[in-house]
Image (tube, rainbow, N blue to C red; front, top):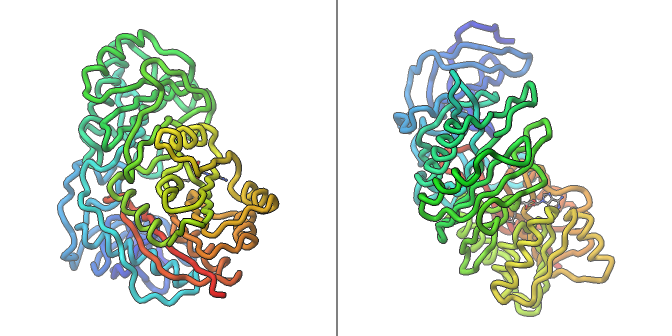
Length: 450
Ligand code: SAH
């Protein structure tokens, strides 16, 4: 066991899922933030357990050629991004390698390399922001949580957001300070404003402003609306009533104060309506490339029925509709299903059907009704597929399964389960939808040899 507060020399050999450096010291794995593979460092141990420890760099003895000066001045304390200390080559290398290692270790594969769709830009790509708010010295401000805490680090200009998004945040905060709107305090469960949520259509430029509030009204809404109207693209202002304790940003009730309550955007040549509660990938350019990869891997023919589980507002479902005989989407959030049905209509798509419910349960139900699925697309949240969904895939026995994933560890676990049911991995690709952040998206295709 390593000794707390003692300094050790360490060679960084790998990264954790959160993007921290990993070193082996005296047989113990040490996790070190802001470290780059290949670097030799002196590390002070801050937490020591039997098999692992956590430490901080006190000196870099051999610096990686991939180390760069941080462009974002607050990135060392803000918990939003993870990789401003390294160049983008190293970031994409480690992301591709993470997906590869997961598929090898947990998915029983033996991949020597894995391609990644690198992003053309690390700046201004993020089309959604959620700013928590706080008060200091009688002044309210917004920013992002410090990593692992609920302290709000003020952020004047976030490099991964479009400027308009920060302008919305500043406009809301000016209004908050002028009209003395109270800020939510999670300890006492008192105060009104919890989060500022902004979503911007990358192609349409339309902006949705949603204020998550511990209540159901805000003072002088017309004063805020007047100011927001000065921002080009401002389309709608919505309150999300969230009076519950806990970390969820949005509540279940939405009150539209201005505009239609949703925005529109164009993706893969289709027009989409997006409600605040509905999921929509934040990196438009890279999402489009990811969906193009999904379409090409699915190899759909005109007689196919395609089932899209975890379909959100129907992005992938509808992008596949013209190639298929029929497409069926399943999604658990009712607003997203309403959006998806509306999206089929707005694009004149008549061979799409959407069901609201748990993916696994709905899929089992569809299978019981005698629906056949030739190709199944799954795009689950981080926890991956549940037992029902795996069972439904087994029963449907589709020719191809296209699995889009935001967590390579659960993806690899599920790949192993599908391999036990006769599938083989055809191809795997990582995609960088979150430059400068540790999350990595990936897509694999599984087929069933007959
Ligand atoms: N494929 C879509 C959405 C992917 S995000 C897109 O790319 O835009 C994952 C989606 O799964 C979210 O919309 C989430 O609301 C939904 N979801 C989460 N748990 C679910 C469950 N148990 N059953 C069905 N859908 C679920």
